[in-house]
Length: 218
Image 1 (cartoon, rainbow, N blue to C red):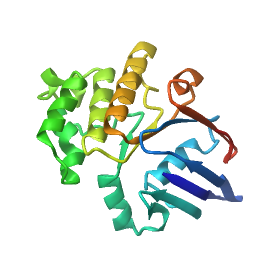
Image 2 (image 1 turned 120 degrees about the horizontal axis):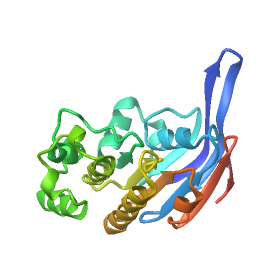
Image 3 (image 1 turned 90 degrees about the vertical axis):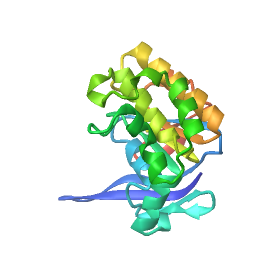
């Protein structure tokens, strides 16, 4: 992934509010990067732009040679299905689907469902005996493992995580991150994680800091 000159503002009654100001960033396949910064620094906005969930005002987001920022909405939808996996702080599991169905959801959308990989992923996540349950029947840590598995089931080129351990206690969060890093290494995808925690950020290969929409360190 290569981000060049990425800028984003939001409209307010007082006029445009700049959130990102010409951010440049690179992330190689198989590399892990923690994005830190205070609330309002632009971390989540950056993640949403890279994840093709929002439109930038200016700049490029290159993934496998494709400029995501320049794609129409149907093109962005294809990227979200086939190229990018996202793990949210709130898990965002589908309540009406079982664990097994949630795990397979994105890979089926992307026409990349692989029974062997799904079985291995389910086993690695410790969910073998839970595939028939529904999200409401799981603990927070179990729900997060389902969310991680769903995001990785289609073997994305890039995995994004927005405060993925924010709703978990420290031991459970640490275990979830450790498992994520193991699976990222196995799949070879890039991993960009937004976090407030210096301790968790130190577990990743690189750290970067956003302040007032500007990248001040990498």
